[in-house]
Length: 487
Image (tube, one colour):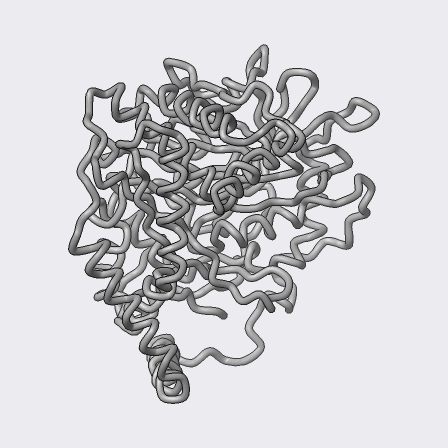
């Protein structure tokens, strides 16, 4: 029975501290019809998923407590009432089943918290899309898995060939999901783990003094730069509710790579520059002067070791805090500033500094962690927006015999953070999924259009011969003026 880490528990605490913060990650996967023109039904999906859940025993487990606090974190325990029908359901879009309607449906799906008395995940089979397409919308609580891990989890349903045969199903009470020895009192387990972390850090500091100095200096620089010098105050940081809006923007993977490389940067730098253009457009449309120091974005960084094999649940992420030059009008200058910033942050070990602060906070008991760390790590003083970039498969994938067309990624919103952007690459296509608070962001289409225009502006920096294959038709999907639930 594995106990949540302090970082995993943070995402539960964020929801408890503010009802508008919904910490579910996931997205909507759009599929073409099967070769024979058919689509799967919900019972077939349930059977296929049940046959593979032996690879994900955590998805058969629930939290031992629906809330955090006290002297110990909740742990994962087998759910004796597990029923796949509680987690896999069916929905249909109204005619004509447009992409705008699918974005509306996705917004509504992510407007509701997961039930903490059950395993923290849900999948919906959506039919009624245009041209015979169908979709799978999925969400998992962030305390169970991070963005990088969630790609592996979704991979349980996805195959590299259309005809993979499912294995025998596993039940919720299978011995692989139960503890094999009596569990020690939780407070003792927690204290032992905290002591082991502290002792391990001490041993590492003695045997690797340069590493310890580097991490300590990076943590100190992070506190001075990103906490004492607060993020600018903008209309993006206001109280939010649970209702969401959602839009997508598309770009070519090859083009974004070429754009980033043109100035010595990366695909991620190009994507951040496009987002900076979009946020600049949004602030100007609202009559706000873009802050000269930039809009601060929290950019999650994967800190899993390269040697990790298989699926690793839980959260192994740190963060870089990148100033988006929204006051800069020139696309080339905007990209160059981001390339220079991310290169400097990586060289300074900023992600190590953030990870060290998280490690130190993990030693505190849950009650103290909830009162302090969960409030400060995701405060509006620290950052304005979250922008996460997760790489998917470069090759075509299939589910239930149907080819996967594209993925709409969704990033959760912390309290008083009205907008977040998730960027997902798959099979040559990059999709920007823009998640926003419904009430405070009626102008989400301005941001989506601004990101698309930012990509166009950056594209002009690269000769056509170096752009690669373009797959970005119909790049922007604007949300409807009135978001209505699609049932």
